[in-house]
Image (cartoon, rainbow, N blue to C red):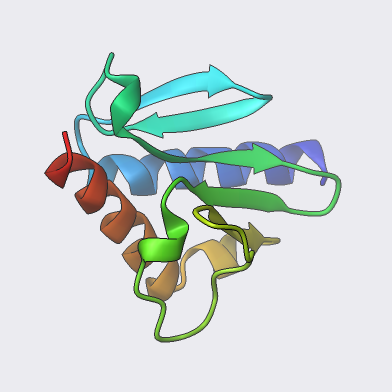
Length: 111
């Protein structure tokens, strides 16, 4: 991804996660940022975002438990699921906001 696209998507996803979960902490790790619903409590990490050559990946710690009526989540492991985002327009889809909200809600319920 081009540097301006990375910066634009990074800023947009951070803003979106903050709107959904105002007390979230962003923990730099694994070359990206993890989302921690309760700052300082790693047990409340519910996902993160990471950049690759052609896309940004939003990963969900317990993604297999999320309701996905549109079928946008990818992955087949026991727990994790992810979304591949290639543009700001894709990021702004309501289903993506819903996935982040569900994941944050799960983390807060289990905190």
